[in-house]
Length: 483
Image (cartoon, rainbow, N blue to C red; front, side, top):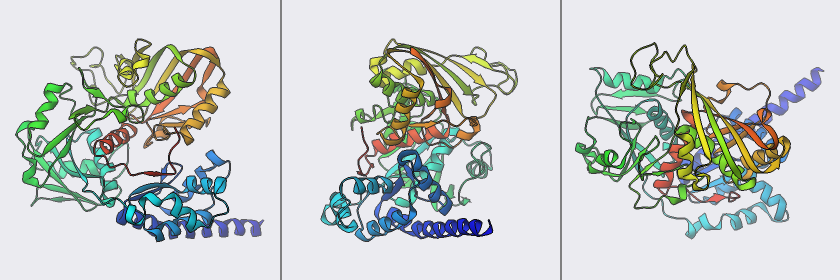
């Protein structure tokens, strides 16, 4: 028994050593060439050796066997030697592609053929990163900041330059920095944070974040801070229509606006993965819809594509938000004045109707309601649907699992079938929504799906994807994602 135990430990240490050897290669490709490496959509950038091994183990979900790090390390070394331009490279996908149709080719020959468009003279010149300003620094604003800071090492995509807030106290900088450093739900910031009083800024992992105090978005001159053609991300919720959000465009140095909430009127509501390709260069204001809309729209799309949806009801079981009262007090909204920490609160949601802005084919087919519950993060949407054609639990679950692993929507849709998961297990999920397969109920044309979502972090990741689309900073993907 001891011999077997020692053998397993020795194997683990060898694999860990290989993972550690991958880290500088992953970092070099990212920082020097703008190459993001992943394993079936799980990014390897800024990951520990153990996280890299976990990503290899995740490959079992697709290939039924764990991805061998003895295969990925030489692949990564060969890619690094080629010095490609900006790209998104899935190591597992490349290995699967090579085995399927190019097994006889030498690795270097295969890679030169596949990556030809980003090699040598074909490498696109590095473009300047897009400046991003966060107007507001609440729950979503701070999570967007964390994600943007984590991406800053590549220096080719989105660059967080400033936050705009109303000054709250004499030690405002310290308090803003502290809220970024510590989070009761999402844990400590991964890195170092300091206050720069001389520049009225916060430094996070080397990123200088200018803190601008203002009550009027139209009067700010961002060029005074070296910021130009910036995308302003309004996460205050103060303005929802074109007239209100247009105030940002009057500011010198501002070019585009993204609202982190559903927009009103004719504003384009964008759910990345569904209708992000509709963003045009002349769309100066777009909205990233709501967390719930982002969670359910991708799932509803693939179900409608495969089975057809006659009608449905969306019930969201949603964590309480800062809009509610901690204890009973006056609130202009119905029921929201009652204690969020003590009650389940029935309230309205516009998510069902907002879905149709991204998926017009579902217009008039959905209703919705919401129940706010005493948890700080992670929500659930229950989709009660009538389909055009019959299916069963195993078939629909298998379909959604495949979509989550191999389709172009794998960044939006995840799938899980563990009998033990609860809401806290999904804190920090980067997916818009996670289908709970064990909870699926299917009877003929009637289908009930349960979709978990981190209404803070998962939604923030969707906002970042919209920002990347606006900045046109998406590099080519190898191999290309399936439709």
